Length: 119
Image (cartoon, rainbow, N blue to C red):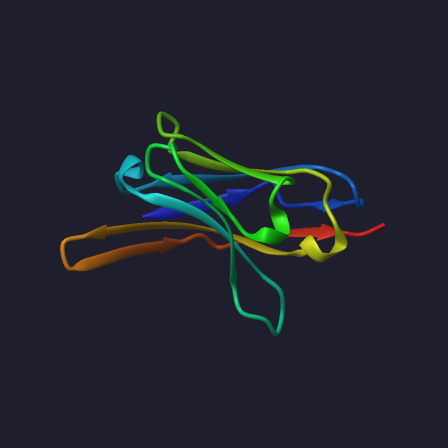
């Protein structure tokens, strides 16, 4: 199982980035996909989530209207379009896959990609 994030970079406030997470080794279309972020000294927080077929999305209040999560099940990839970026968006962004099946929960994480918003 692999989740590989890409697209992190240094960007100026007000700028945009698009993160990608390529999945392999599991049935991508059966998993809810999420983006989390974490800064040093703080807990990892949920940023955005999309249902397995993409019909439902959820966002943290701090990113609503600026970040958009989407997925392409044919490409086994989930995206996070980030617009109007703020310095407080600076963090390591992690891709997460989760599925509840029977009595078990299956969860996978990527290695993270750094997003830095600074002038």
